[in-house]
View 1 (cartoon, rainbow, N blue to C red):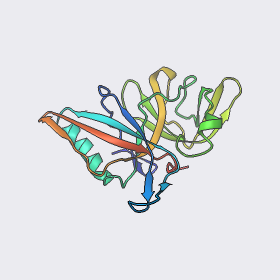
View 2: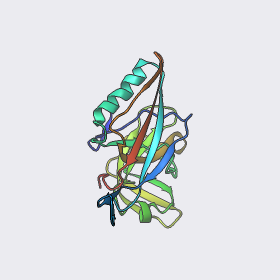
View 3: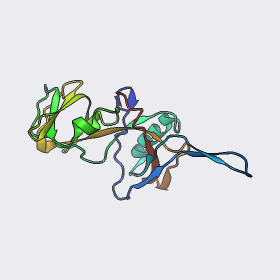
View 4: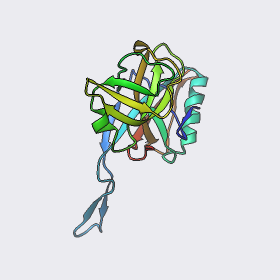
Length: 206
């Protein structure tokens, strides 16, 4: 299992044939007895995105990989990295293995996404043709004022990245939303699982 910044990365792709179900959950607790006035405590102070994903396993090897990941989480206890299912960023040109930065079209990353938390500082780079992903941390960002922004990385890319051959997105720090998970065995060679995941934007490393 691949690790990044001390946490496992869930590299098994979710099944795109099922629509993701998003729930903006809020942790609210009632205080008081069943009679008389009651108070309400907003535990988190804001809503948290809970997203449901579906996985389809075609064979015992697929199920063993997903089950090992589930078991390692200890329910909601141990967080992990979940690569976005989207192309969140676009490379502005080709990049070389020795580059310690990437250039992207201006989207307000330096002013809005980078400064405040670690939630959007961690990136994945995935080759479209298949192969191992690359994970890097953004340590600084700058608006070049010419329609591009430069994102400076903690380490060199390590592999040449032509613009047309790579997808770039955010690594999200998450935990499972449920302590009990299940895998539905449709047959020996066909299994499905639906897993709810909560993002932890304030717990991603700075």
